[in-house]
Image (cartoon, rainbow, N blue to C red):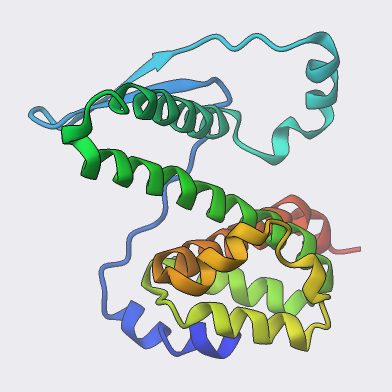
Amino acid sequence: MIDYILSLEKLYVMQQNVSPPVFMQSTCYCIRVDRFREEVVSHRVTVAVPDALFERLQPVKHHFNISAICQEALEMVITHEELKLEVTQPDNLVDRLQAEKKVLLNKVRQAGFELGIRSSSKLSYKEFRHFERVAPLAGSLDEEVLEYLWSFLDLKEYPQELRMQDPDFVYLLEVDPASRVVFAQGWLDGVLSVWQTIKAQVETVQ
C-alpha cells in the first residue's frame, strides 16, 4: 500500500495543489450551490436526539464533524426516498440504477472506513505520518490499490476474517473496479480519523 501510493507522488506534485475542504462547524447544514452565481447557501437544520445519545455524544463530539455526518446521512436517506419515487417511473431506469449504485458505493466506503479504524491499531508512528502525507493522492488511486491494501494488511498480520463483514461487499469488490477504489479511500479516511484523534497527544513532548 505504501509503495503504491509513493508511486503516485511524482504525478501529484505536477498537479495543482488543492487542499481538501475542512468543516469547522458542528451544526448540521443543508448545502445548496447556485451554479449561476457560484454561491454556496447554507441552511441550518435542528437535529433532536434522545438524552442518552446526547450524553454519549459529549465526550467524543470533538473527534468528528457533526455537520458532515448529518449531511451524509441526509444524502443517503433522500436518495433512498428518491429511489422509491422512481420505481413508478420506468423511463428513468438509468437514473434509478445510478442512484442505487451511489448508495451502494457510500456503503462500501463506510465499510472501508470502519476497517481503517479497526486495523489502525496495527500501524506504526511512521506509517501514520506516511498516510497523512500522501492523503491528497487518494483521488489518484486506481483499481489495483485494493491488492496493495490486502498485501499491506497481510504484512501487518491483520486477520482476513476481520476485514470484510458483509459477504455481498466481498463479491462487489471482486467485480466492480470503482468499489475497490472507494473502499481503499474509505480505509485511508478511517486510518486518518484515528490519527487526527490521537495526533496531538502523540506529538506532545514529555
